[in-house]
Length: 368
Image (cartoon, rainbow, N blue to C red; front, side):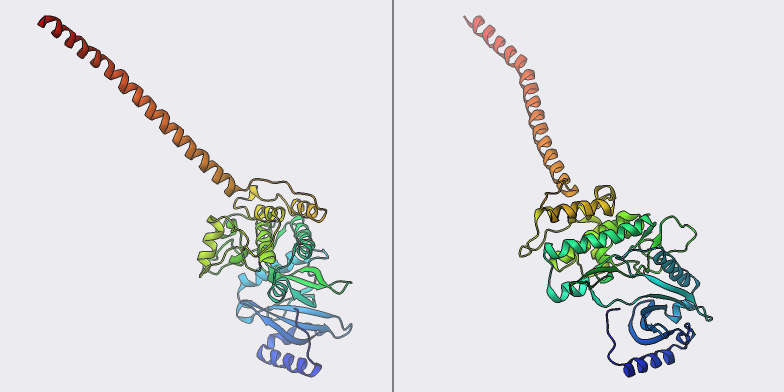
């Protein structure tokens, strides 16, 4: 949704080619004029369009025909539309329309965003410094906090799904979160949603680089899963690399479940307070993370005011301290046991020693 139009003629040629390739696009409401195909993903495609009557620009997302014929996939798409439509926040890309064509092809009409993704920004300019990053983090957390209050969890929060639009000062720092494609309405049990973790055909639901341990293990999710993904996103923004990488998805997912987050590369300067916030968001157990996005925002705002954050001992540090105490306890216990054994042996040997001495003395007396 960040590409721009080259020319009216080329857009028209692209749109014509698209409708010839996929005749179902002709079934979209007549007020939407397709301009260009932006991208195509695993299950859907996004087009830039405009309203023929108002001239307003939109992004239209459709489910690819091979998936549109599948009832479960259509229901997932409908769930996305339902989830995204419930969210009315400045930091979330707004859904303006939704429908299903005569041939049962679902489509979603969203605001068109001119900007770059957070992933593109970091990839182009390198890691952000704290002054640039913290206001962006606060905006993302605010938008996600709104979603959670509406009982919606994103489940695929990552830098590619954060678009930075131009603000009044001309800077690309105005956050819009996009693509609630695998979002879940927490309390809507009747809404068919994708399974947690992996689907039965092995397809990963969510992005492993930013996926919470609970999502990987297929456990029931709540907003704390997005908090973990937010921690991974913050780590990437400050370092330029995801916290966990591997040769395969399985490698990455294993590390999310079992390994503590690695420290930042030595050349990257991140304050201890910000590190503490990021690593707390990335705790393995939900109860060790921030309880809500609002709690995360509170700590981030302290940094903007130069106030130190609460230093909560992280779980892997607690585990190290516990191991140290266990080692000390084993050493002390071993010393005590050895002392007791030594004392016992000495006690047992004393009567024998006394008896031998008595026998020796008696023998000496007899010889006299």
